[in-house]
Image 1: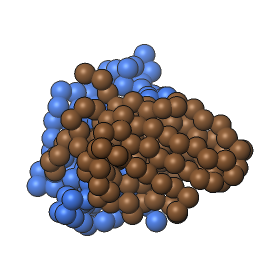
Image 2 (image 1 turned 180 degrees about the vertical axis):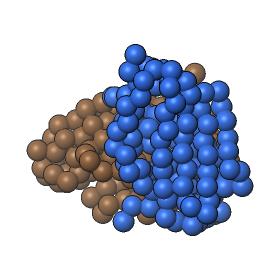
Image 3 (image 1 turned 90 degrees about the vertical axis):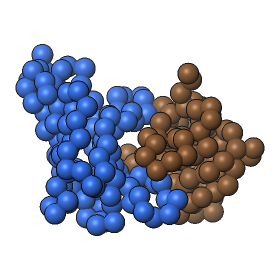
Length: 114
Length: 115
């Protein structure tokens, strides 16, 4: 069974540009999460989808970040315009519905904003 | 202000000995705790979890202990193996917060198991 996949693995862009990250969850996982780890800091929650609906977006830093999950399958996270402080590793995770189901993580996308 | 704290950035242990990784939390609403393991260039991988109604959970070489009154948990790995060398993250969740499933993470502890 394929795990969570993320694309691209690395992205280097200049300040002010736009970047779109993609996440494909494990098939059948209705829960999809985005997290971010900035260098030297802890992994931080960004948002949580249940199918195509945003269940919790309390961690989104500001309105430069837009997440979508059309059709309840893959998700995209767009940063527009990117700022220097957006640099970090963006992780996507997915899980089955249910309180105790573990979250399976993708390998992450390393974003560098110059 | 960090709600989940892993105060040891690194730990070095001899192969075959016990590794003990510690985690403290401040939020009394947390009632489910997880340990994840992470290798370089990979995402975190779930290792073991514990609900607040228990004080111990064991899975093979891995045991997690929870002390609710002290708001402290620890992960024991015995015997430690070189393949266990990785960064270990402690994470917590408030299960009773409706459909809230977000994990709150510690900074991680880098474990090195020496042959």
